[in-house]
Image 1 (cartoon, one colour):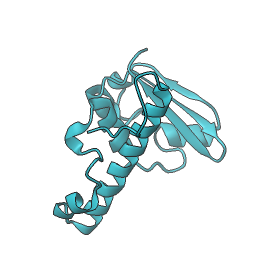
Image 2 (cartoon, one colour):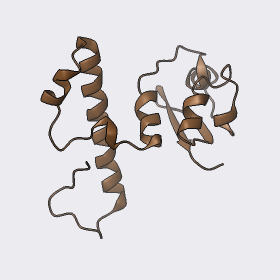
Image 3 (tube, rainbow, N blue to C red):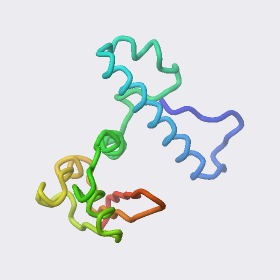
Image 4 (cartoon, one colour):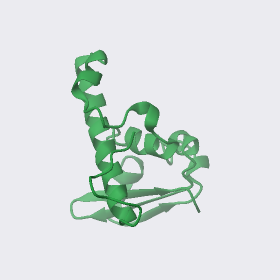
Length: 134
């Protein structure tokens, strides 16, 4: 289920649709996290707006995005942590085949057809992109 803003049509900017989908994914993540913290998955349906995404609506790459939001990396740990420690951009080609010591989410990347991952420092954090092309 994807919500569409009132008045939007096919000619509207694809970027706006992408932002809406990202917001829906964030809301789904928050509702799943809240349900997990309270161990009450049944209450998830009651809290989630009727037009919001459900886990069944997600593509493999959206699952990758959602699951990656649950990861935390210490300074120097994993691709994001190493990027922060070195304060430099790190590219990883063939991420879906990488050894888990290099990229601990390689199996997850494989399931989502993520082939290349890039991390770069931004402000006081890290931005990570995963793409399905080399």
